[in-house]
Image (cartoon, rainbow, N blue to C red; front, top):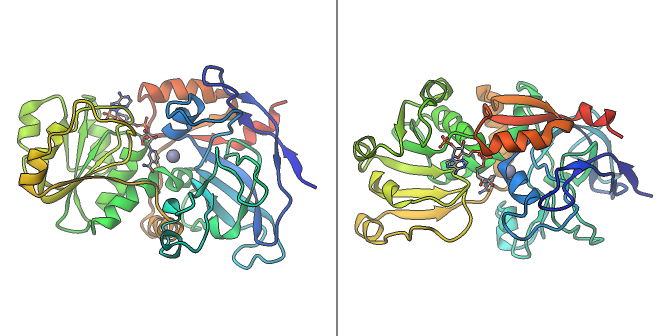
Length: 353
Ligand code: NAP
Ligand code: ZN
């Protein structure tokens, strides 16, 4: 028999999120039941709640930066026990045997990964629901361990903002001697700065917002460039081995290409959709440069990131909110008015109807 838990859902693209009980399945042999303590608020939650990508099925319970404590485990679970500090990110299942899964890139599962919310359970077909809820039941292979050395609240955003920026950094072998630019200082951007710096890179923030300089430097940036300032952009010519572009909405990529070094790569992690204005291929071809995309990261990479953060004492800068304030938080996120990630204290959900 499954159980009902409290949750917050969007029921249409235009309605605010509100209380909406959901069902969590009984434990299968390989499942872990987790009491959710904290859940980060990702811009993808907002895109999904408002159907920005056109694929949302309502009601939807967002939340894929889940931190919690194991309540109970199924008979076949070997990796976790009650009381363990754990996290769940953007995925809860995948086929496990295709080339992508075998190599630990479950997000690119040939059959499609099962995402934490808005997905369909691979066994019973029920909709998956995210972390804006009291509890979650997840297959043990999609649960990661949170090191004892890091604060649980600040660890929540590592499960999406962290891994999404960690993947391009690791793929590009970023380390001492590397030059990295981060476009946009929000949830993803501030993690990208912290992680690139901890890996030993020289880090530049490129922002549309004057006034973020002091924060960017405190987070680890060596330099801040205003994207609207042509002179500052021109001074960056040929500099970056890697640019991680976190901007959520359509914007002109052409001004960034000259700032890439030979073989340099601009990796899009934010905006999904047609580019406007069109991308000029000439400087890309002639300069031997690349424009690519990257989607979150696999489970082994997520555990690697958490362990790295445990060793280096890295967590997200968070602003704690109650579940009841989620709609206001979305509006503030749209205005970039958050330093630098909202995290919901899920204890607040217990007091809702
Ligand atoms: P966020 O906290 O809202 O930060 C976005 C930043 O982009 C802002 O702080 C702002 O920084 C900059 N920006 C530039 N133009 C903007 C505009 N017109 N409106 C709003 N911000 C603008 O968002 P996030 O949570 O970091 O997410 C960023 C994007 O990544 C979202 O689209 C999200 O869906 C996506 N995402 C992708 C993946 C993936 O796997 N690829 C995973 C998670 C999230 P400045 O003021 O410094 O310019
Ligand atoms: Zn996310």
